[in-house]
Amino acid sequence: MTRCGLVAVLGAPNAGKSTLVNALVGQKVAIVSPKAQTTRVRLLGVAMEEDTQLLLVDTPGIFDPKRRFDRAMVAAAWGGAEGADVLALVVDAKGGLGAKVTDIAARIVDRPETKYLILNKVDLADKPKLLLHAEKLNAQVQFAHTFFVSASTGDGLPELKRSLAAEMPEGPWHFPEDQTSDATERTLAAEVTREQLYLQLHAELPYAATVETEKFVDREDGAAEIHQQILVERPTQRAIVLGKGGTRIKEISARARAELALLLDRPVHLYLHVKVKPGWDEDRSVYRDIGLDWVE
Image (cartoon, rainbow, N blue to C red; front, side, top):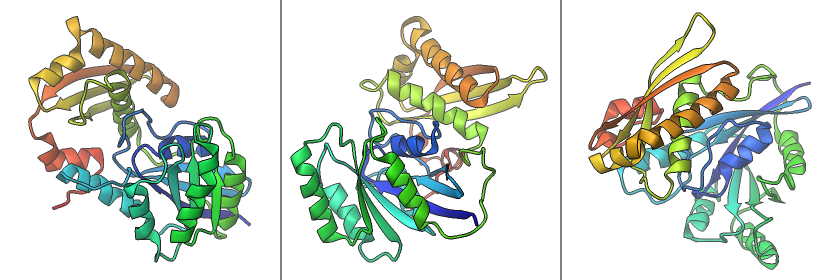
């Protein structure tokens, strides 16, 4: 008898949710960077544990939204929890318990789903405080299980994965055994380029940038031809992305192209251009292309 179920991975920004999902799946399905709120949309990673298929919903970090774009990301996070068999609250054990964590915990107290507490980054945390964090959160929420893990090193992940699999209901798998994500190649391409923006311009580029895949063509020679535009709000930001003599955009393109060639398992021709579009985060079409719902 096969099993299949949905695990909503929730938490504050930078808790390591995407790294955890990637580690449980066994390969990269969500982009990661040191920048908080890297994940913007709900992404589904598909992990296998013997006869069980785990559908892991990687959600944007939950925080106090200020702008429409922020509200859309938070709405996507809570939307990813709908219909879940398990709510997994991921906490940065190194950062401790702040208001964002306790606020999220308060919002799931009365929800009927089975709840897991996952204290992540234990390899970097102050060990004496780990049990205190766990005790405080378990006093607030009735968690069925508490795990201490490091998504980056793999510590504690086999035990977590087996436990999650045991919670899943009996039923057919929703995806083929070798499929690892529900993301389209078009979406994946935009995410990989955005990841390179964050990794290479982490300290220089604000959140006011996004990537749109304008054209994705399967060429006759088997290669993928991808045309993307990077949207920024101001000319100064465009200059930062381009770099002196175009050096930065070339490096972003080269690294994104190499990453996509590995993920897509075929040659990739990537063409990037940078467009200044003030207020792009108030454009409904951008939300549609990114995969976010328009919120009032």
